[in-house]
Image (cartoon, rainbow, N blue to C red):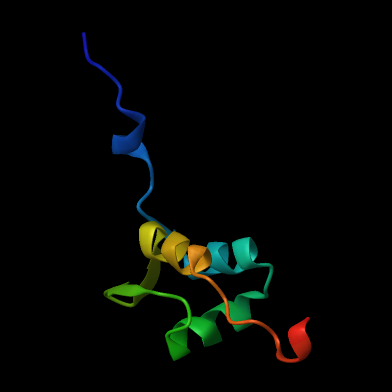
Length: 70
């Protein structure tokens, strides 16, 4: 009898396209942001992947207030 560990099967990376969808931006905008280092990525061959843990950390970071106090 084997035990099933959900964490073991959870994906540790997502595509740049999926990161863009989660951010609500287009595919092109997501790739541009990844190229600028605004979305964390790793490369495996020609593939660019987004580590989920680093992506979630990025989203959890406090943001600077907008100019004008908005």
